[in-house]
Amino acid sequence: MIRVDTQDDLPIYRQLVESIRYEIASGVYAPSEVMPATRALARELDVSFHTIRRAYGILVEEGVLASQPGKGFVVVGPAALGKSERMELGARIVSGALQRMTGIGLDDSEIAYLMEEQRSLLDFDQRGKRVVVAAEYQELAEAALEVASLMTGNIVEIMDLESIDARLEADVILVPMSRLASTKSQNARAEVLGFQHAFAEESLMAISALMDRETLGLITRYPDAIGPVSQQIRLLTGFKGQILATAVSGHDIQVDTIAAASDLVIYTKGASRTVRRVGPDSWHALMELDIHLTTSSVERVRNLFR
Image 1 (tube, rainbow, N blue to C red):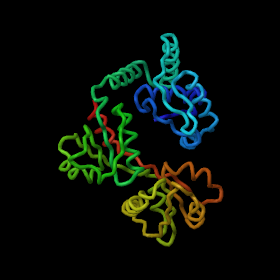
Image 2: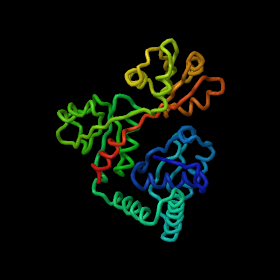
Image 3: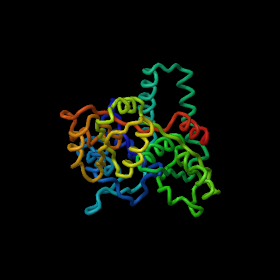
Image 4: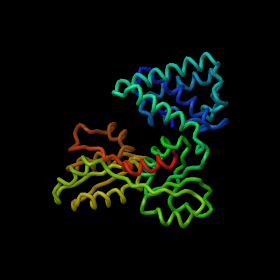
């Protein structure tokens, strides 16, 4: 996953170059594969598309990407850096990491432990395994994917729950706890692990404080989250009032209308860019409904790949 960090001293375009180079070297983007369009990637990372084009341009000069009319930027092959360049780049990355770890209060022994742990993850024999994540809705699957990608060091795929059967050739399958038993019975060859998710307590407390005559606005990224999230909110908070909901994928026409009619607006992480772009100066109370795996579920995923 291509990432940037606005808190990093390294310019964004250089972060992009290094991140894309790593993704190609690790096989996320294969030779001849078309890279994400500049404007689409800019929207995803919340940066200027000119910054994306600058990073792509550098990689074209390095021979990593090629610009093809009608297609965009296509992967040519992994970056072939010389030893001195690799050492210089590696030293900068390590130096930045050490400064950050020291800045948050880690001592030498804790830093050494973390460095060794991450090195062992790179060497771990689970790399190359096929890891699949499935959930009731896309944003929950993405939350599980983020944890699995971090813990396993593998490329993790998202699949529809109904697509998991005995024919699926996977080494590890992560599913919600409610589907653990049925998934195990459907696919005996894979290691099947169940996970549980939660919402931010601050948001749930705010919803609980609403009166039954008040209205809750819910903004998600994808439409498939509206039903399950609404049901879970009612179950967890006891809220019996009206819920007005919309998804921002493909449009954001209803967002302002729902916000204006709601006493409290909550939105998922995937909808945050649209929410920031459309509002929220004139909106009522606004909170992010963070969807995340529980601590125990994260630990189970970590232990599975140790």
